Amino acid sequence: MGLIGPNGAGKTTLLKAVLGLTDCQGSLSVLGLDPFRQRKELMQNICFIADVAVLPRWIKVSQLLDFLQSIHPRFSRERAEELLSQTKIRKTAKVRELSKGMVTQLHLSIITAIDAKLLVLDEPTLGLDIIFRKDFYANLLNDYFDEERTIIITTHQVEEIENLLTDVMFINDGRVVLDAQMDELSSQFVELMTTSENAAQAQQFNPIYEKDVFGKKVLTFEGIDRDELAGLGELRTPNVADLFVAKVKGGVK
Amino acid sequence: MIEDQIALIKRELWEHRSLYLTPAVIALLLSLGTVTGQATFSAFGHVVDLAMLGGAHLGDNERAAAITALMSIVSVFFVIGMWFLTIFYALDALYTERKDRSILFWRSIPCTDFETVLSKILTALFVVPLITFGFVIVTHLAVLSISSIWISFQGADAGHMIWSVAPLLDNWLATLAFLIAVPLWSAPFIGWFLFISAFAKRGPFMMAVLPLLILPMLEKILIGSTIVAEAFYIRAWQMPLFKGIDPTEFFDQDTQSIPEAISLIDMMDLSGFLTSGSLWAGIIVCALFTTAAIYVRRYRDDS
Image (tube, rainbow over all chains, first blue to last red; front, side, top):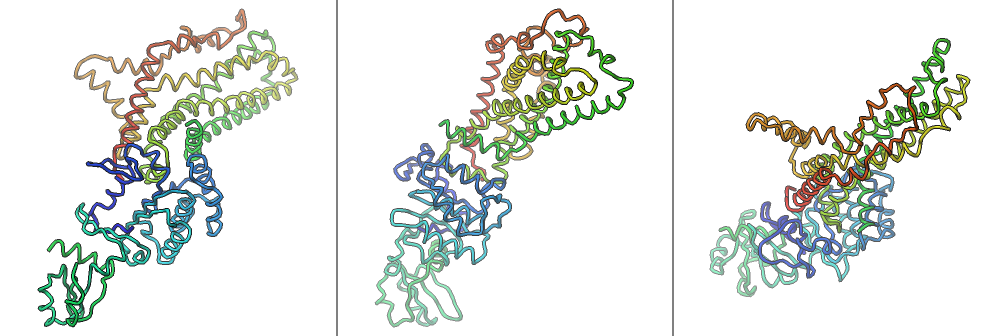
């Protein structure tokens, strides 16, 4: 699931509450557990990468594996070693000697070796170059993902994860703006690209957002029958990034 | 639980290599110092000999006392080193992980804040003294061996002069008791430093030390009493481990007139120490600060 929101929308706060790092009002249940009060049990079934900088810089790769092996009941050392052998990361290296991309690779490898039901990624690829980012998501899908596991991910690079998502949630100002499955989007939303003259006519259908692109009008509609707009211009399903802008900016209007 | 604690304490030793490097450096310096000192003596071999140092005329008890004094001086260096080491370790233990944001990784692992902080206070109170103890034994053996070589060069029998009378076991037991007693007696301060380590946004050293200096002064100025200052003084200098004997005074006596074999263990009042109300009051204060550190780590969110 992609959790998408502008800066300050409350994404990280939400994830922290889910991870039991902060308390919250109301009730919250993750895998049937209260995250803040049953954090130890929860952490056996959850993994998270908060952002690239959090692995301690002084630790050696081999020490990290030793430590997890003795402390984490669901950590498989064999699996971690197998994944690491596919990278350039030496087991004798310290985290501080690795490049930013390699630290992320290392973190993803150890997390993939943990048999957890839920993986939470908060801006996991921040500050990485495009090649590492592509590899990261490829590895995530190939090595980690299966039908039993859930991944919650936040990122600003929406385009890169759009094709991986099954569910998407937008939040803004601490409120859920959209909560949908990806394959529902095409039936719920439509984007019309048209001329200014036709736009006036289209506006009676209450677009949630409109913008100008190269002298043309682009209007986004929610919950409308596509047939009603037929003939007014070019219709398509908005991509997640455009839809996000439409929902967040349109909501402000 | 116990396996987790062992893993967590190992982790502390990986992160804080000073926990064993500091006593290792002290051991090396003392051993080198012994070699240098005795080499210097040897250079003046024609004027300084065993007879001049008094060694040739001493009886068994006197030699045992002299060796005990030598071993105790060695131990004192380690105790001083351990004191500083423990303070800096406690100040660092919960501060660095926040500064480098690795706390987010440590909190992603199935360990409670209680377990993590517990491993740190256990390290400060017990692991550091035990590591130090290991290096004290090695250094004692090194210093005595180096001295044996020197004595042999002077033409005396080191086996007789040193090893037949050296009260090794007594000295080591006493050293172990002392090394463990010091942090326990200083526990309220260690707890305080650990709490500040969890609490301080920046500059934990000043934040921990300044109140300890200012509080007695404020009390004196505002109330005119010196209760805090006296409590600190007792904590620093009057550990109730010795039976009213000041060991420095003891060794200042004329070593020629020792009537019977001395035992450091006999000078200690272990049961008196362990049943002392001040000791346990201090441990309770330490437990309170440690609990506060656990709560700060758990509830404060400044990442």
